[in-house]
Image (cartoon, rainbow, N blue to C red; front, top):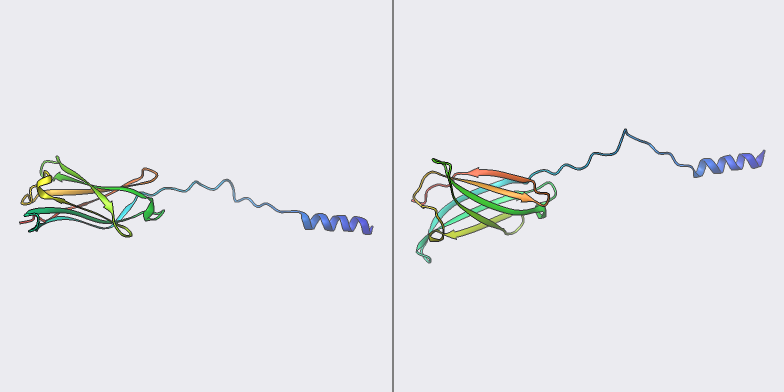
Length: 139
C-alpha cells in the first residue's frame, strides 16, 4: 500500500495543468504613426537673400519613434487642389523630423495665402498617418 501511495504522490507532484482562455491570442494590431506637433512656414534669410520654407513635426508610433521610417510634406494649392511641391523630412533628435528648403529651389510662392501642407509618416509595417497644416504667407 505504501508503494502505491508513493507512486500516486510522485505522479501528482510532477504533473502540470494547462489552462485555456478560449483560443490563440489575437495578433498585434499595427497603428499608424501620429503627430504630436506639426508646423510649416517660411521666413526671410538674409544670408541666402531668399525665403526659406521649413517643415517641422514631432511624430510617434505605438512601437516607438524608431519604427517611423519616413516623413514627407506635400504642399497643395488649397484653392485648386493641385500638388504644388513635395519635400522629404529628416530625423532630428527624438520624435522630431525637420527640413528647410531655399525658396528659389521650390515651386512655392512665399506670398501665396492658400497652401495646405499634408504631412505624412510611414512606419516599418507600411501604416501611414497624416495631418494637415496651413502655413501663414511669408509677407
